[in-house]
Image (cartoon, rainbow, N blue to C red; front, side):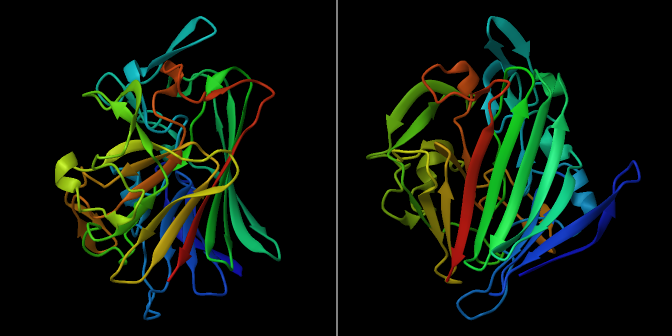
Length: 342
């Protein structure tokens, strides 16, 4: 296992951004950018031992500095949506920066995906990794408290890409972090409609017309949302037009690291399993991607699939959902693992 770095680009303020590459001994490579704590590439051989990059991204920093659908980045302070861009903590109403109509999406327009995180390379006998740190100041995008955030990416010889997220605050605040990688196990070519998906989830959070949870948790049985038996993503896609964009309630009894999903591409033979300590996962089928140029390809809707491990959307305003409230002295500490095989 090894770690390397090379220049990737320059921010408008003159700061240099480097690309860090994690290598294992089985041919898997992961590129990580401190800008946005972004996974910019995951290269993994297919059933014919041919290498391929299985996530969407850009070849240069300019792509990530421009307008894009959160490709590979770490989103926060609160991933997914907060209804009305507001919440109440201990009787005080906090108004957030709205960036999707009257709601906030993925922490606001200047969320964690727009920040130059500080990198700290790591090596141990068991794995190689990159730790990235960011300090989100009190009032950032409307959120209370100074939040110290750390995300740690690790790669081992079991072809496991680990993502550990930790955070501490000096005032009560809400935290919900996820990585927003867009996966296409065929190597970035074509769409993902033939990808076969398993989700160990028997319920999902119902949404209103603004994609904000109603508070009701519904069964997936006899609906197009049922992936408890693996099926092609495109099988029922026309029944949920324009595609899937929904939070699933993971069927786990504990918050230990648990396998909650598996994605398989019959063409390449690649499989990706998802393990997490978090209670939810957002299935998103890149419904609004259009004419997106990245890595020499033009991507359209359904060109990739996101499996964003998370707390539920709008939890700060939904008393029946698992709480995302973080108080001083407590630690936000969650793990997700993407395990690759052929």
